[in-house]
Figure (cartoon, rainbow over the protein chains, first blue to last red):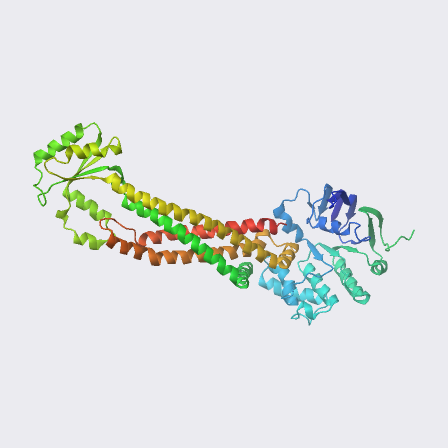
Length: 232
Length: 297
């Protein structure tokens, strides 16, 4: 589903020194896997996520996502790539002037889906994420956990094959985070590949899924059923 | 209408409403520039009309007596005059225009001013020899030689009459054209800036759209249409302004300036598609350029 081969990404810092955000990364994520990308701030997690949606291009190496080689992907085909990927952010990125239903429907509207399909699919997904009853609320009337559920609903409404989550529990308290993780787990069980960047140790430890640890832009650990820190 | 188009149009109009002041500024600036552009184009067609091919070719008119102010020219005198004109080395070409032909041309020239045609008796227009010279500046040679010729009423240097008129209109038209182009550039910059502000105000929404895989043009089109609507509105207003004023001014002038054909409402109507094309074109171009970098993937 996702394959990186010797990927290097370099930024130029203000002092004109080159900073390696990612150095010679090779990684493969299979269909239906659940992978945590862990590591301290500045270890390259965000760059990794941005490369997968083709927001950025690597300096070297090849990236394949959902059967597409991102290095040779024409820019007009990028939207098609992103329709295969759902994206969940730490700060939710909801539209404040739209209701819950409208926020989720928006993702289908801009893809030109029919009204009937939107009306069928949106309640289904809101039910899945546990937001039935909140359909007409606006984001500021919801708790952080509920807002994140809206953003997950929006990411998943189009049935993407891959769900990318960038610190989805970063703004949430531990109890709420557990609820969000249960939801992501449920989505993973429908067959979607989930890649989640996080530095929430408790969550990683409780899930016991594959863990890829980055440090200074390099993979220092890749462990199935892993925990956040080294177990030796 | 599909949900997709409904969304695009709704976004474009809500953008126009949200930036009402900027929209007004854009419409006004497009109106001013296109009105000037239209005026200079109309002036050009006025010049073309007043100096039709025939007049443009002829440098000297030798009007012949028909007996009203001087003794009518005889056929012999006329043949003699023609022969001598044709033998004259500075003359390139000689045409004869009969009274009937003169009237026909007059009717054709003033078809927009039927009152004028009615007031002219077909008999009043003189027959003439129309002469094209090898060198247009040699008018004096012809004038001196044939002025006192029997049957010749008057010799007119058409070029001199024409040149004065053309010099004046050229200055006015070029001035209007230059101001129009400067204004048009200003309008384009204003549109680009307005669209960029609009895109910036809605950057959250557009970033989410990109994220969920909305097509490029689906994201851009509302902004481009926002600019295009403002440009279209400006073009329509300027068309209306020209349509309301130019025929009236031309009508007044035609009463002041005798014997010159003037453009009318028809020419202003013909101008409409060009104004709309220019307004929409400059707006679309500026919007697309403004969005090129801002909304790149």
